Amino acid sequence: MGYRVVVAGAAGNVGREMLNILDEREFPVDEIAVLASRRSQGTEVSFGDRTLKCQDIDQFDFAGWDMALFAIGSAATKTYAPKAAAAGCVVIDNSSLYRMDPEVPLVVPEVNPAAVEDYGRKNIIANPNCSTAQMVVALKPLHDRARIRRVVVATYQSVSGAGKEAMDELWDQTKAIYNPTAEVEPAKFTKQIAFNVIPHIDVFMEDGSTKEEWKMVAETKKILDPKIRLTATCVRVPVFVGHAEALNIEFEDFLDEEEARDILREAPGLMVIDKREDGGYVTPVECVGDFATFVSRIRQDPTVENGLNLWCVSDNLRKGAALNAVQIAETLGNRCLKKG
Image (cartoon, rainbow, N blue to C red; front, side, top):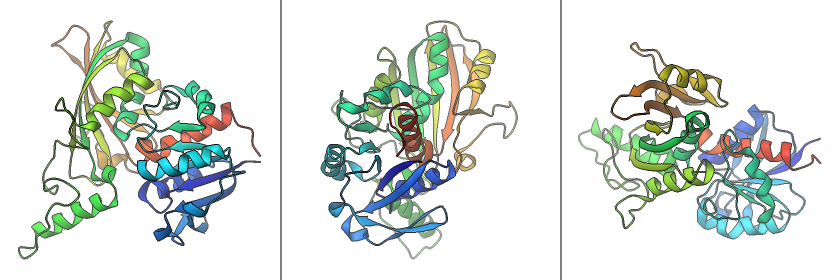
């Protein structure tokens, strides 16, 4: 026996990845429905050996379905998530809409799995921002050991985090650079992304930070510990898939780099690849398609009393979005819901 599961936004990058991961992890699905906007109605998507056709989300009745994984953006989520929740279907939402709602749990299962038990307030659980998700997986076991005071993070985020149009823009601009008669003006991004980096993700806020940077601060406090001070600089890089982060962490207690390495090796969801030699670290290209969050370059920071530096890499379409949503569904099923 299993669950009746809905994937909304199944025609998009994250929705397709959700279907792949549900199948790969052998999630107990009795029945599955795939939804999309009216313009994508009829689009075929794969679920294991099956080919499914997307239904119009506007016409779908959520009554009798156990859970719905949403990857449709904040505007559409605002319309359809309350409908699904009111029909008794638990929504696991990948958009930013509900993340800071005090009545909606924000969950990374390796970090705060018990938070799913509060789903009943609105019948909605929020999936965190992609850059936050992989970071808190790495921070959690270290925080448990030595209590984190402050984090300084610089991100190197792939274009897939901005959707298919962003991936197409990088591809088209890259080709155009080798074709002197072609010219591709920035559309999805504010500046050329090919062979460039852009220190700007999401909109600017009054204090000079971007909303992406604000999300990392606010979400880390909600998921891990409100006392942690965090400052972020979020950068878009010309990589198709895979986010990387350079983390500088200051602790209340001293933590030796060797002990930190051992702690991270034993922590759920993490893989440590840390050899002090050429190629003894993980890059975004190598993490694509993997479930793990990879940690490398673990070393003492001698400029502060209790500091460490590390490098953190993950497939943003997986741990940053689809995988975390499926892990939430697994946690919800194990802790709260009965199989049909």
